[in-house]
Length: 224
Ligand code: C5P
Image (cartoon, rainbow, N blue to C red; front, top):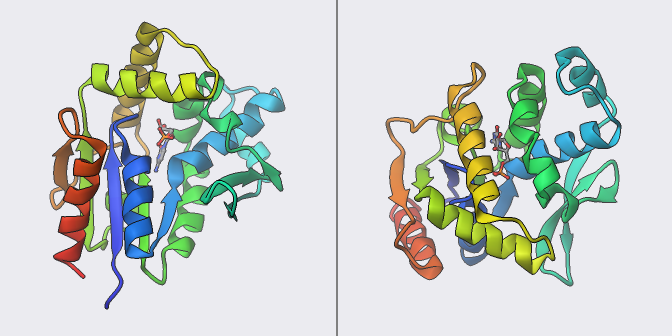
């Protein structure tokens, strides 16, 4: 069977990564969570107290950063490593979520991440989720999706995820963070989040997780 690339873009917290992961598993494809890469850069910058308001400082810090994904047999998932250290948990915190869009708006950060992402998907058979996959990383992807959901639904899902990890955050705070990230991501100069013409929109507000996975799988199977 011919392999394709599947690009999943969309709003923050609408289930792109979990859907992409499940679809990749069923198809035997590689799942790549590009948000994790921008989060890892942000974690480094925060931990090293790099001045976030100085683009030059963030760009300089980039030279010290190596990001890779490694498969964990136990959790059966790819985990994010920053300079050889597992940061999978830490990058999901509200601390990182609060600054990631600012870091991701810097052109040089994007150029470095996109080059690595294109390398990972060059042989096809990849399900990649992010904000610019269909527009910049893989404009030739055989299937492009644009996922959305209401802010409240997204915030409730994110709150449950954080709670599972022991982080208790008010719904309001999460809603504000999601809206703020969507605003910055959609209005930035460098590869803003857009729905490209050939992307299929999937609103997950009223879909069960299994339904949203099945929908993407059906669309993928039509193209394989
Ligand atoms: O997907 P996730 O919510 O983990 O992404 C975190 C942030 O990383 C986004 O809000 C966005 O600012 C940035 N991002 C991006 N381009 C991508 C993936 C994520 O700018 N391809």
